[in-house]
Length: 305
Ligand SMILES: Nc1nc2c(ncn2[C@@H]2O[C@H](COP(=O)(O)OP(=O)(O)OP(=O)(O)O)[C@@H](O)[C@H]2O)c(=O)[nH]1
Ligand SMILES: [Mg+2]
Image (cartoon, rainbow, N blue to C red; front, side):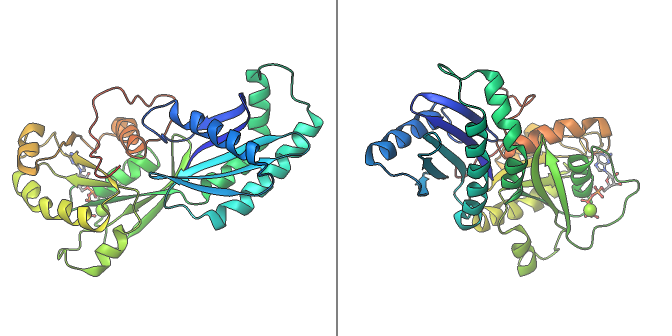
């Protein structure tokens, strides 16, 4: 998943666009990139790509000499595949180089207007880079807890027209706050030792576990949480305590006591609640966009950041 695109030269930043959070400290990425640029320039390391792994990030960067010197970097999560990314970065560089040739850089600090022009010039290439490996969110849980309702709310903002049991895996190509994402509606396997269930959740960047909020369902869901811990230890988790409007529903605190984890109280049969679950899912992937506030109470279980 693409987290950031930055174009700079020394202290001049031509574009610094966050699609998702890279470092906890919001200043850290730009400063790191400036340092890398300084080092590359000092070593005369032009026109050759570098792939740098830092903690859970992969920074793919390049320093151009002509027509003007500039440094370009794409920051991805560490599961990304540079072989697929690099040819697309070259296309972007070609577009950018011809743009700066035709539109000489203004002297002094770069105006917002110029940044907007660069961004709109690159927009189709950026879309292409975003589509390369969209983040995958797996929706898991036992039968009838509201998994498909949550998928539809994330995908279209509407509810399924009528209930139909999900018997096969269903994949949705969706967008969350402009970011392409894959949503997998994964049916309850009954028997959790089924390898097929394991193969469905492999490769998830995030998991949403649905509960119907009953005591029995919470107790039965513990083993599912433990399994995701084992199979996909890096995927962030959101436990949705769904069906909070029903009589059998335990209070969030009671569910938290059973599961020893935070839960997000929810009602998935009201279409107006779609935006609420869309925001939580976007926060699960640490997407950066207007309307996503990371300072408020957090329900995301970060297992291995
Ligand atoms: N009262 C209430 N009903 C809900 C809620 N969420 C979902 N439902 C209903 O519960 C039923 C099951 O919802 P689904 O979204 O199909 O659940 P599912 O987990 O995909 O079900 P399966 O595919 O059969 O495992 C449907 O009739 C929904 O309308 C909720 O928050 N409150
Ligand atoms: Mg279903």
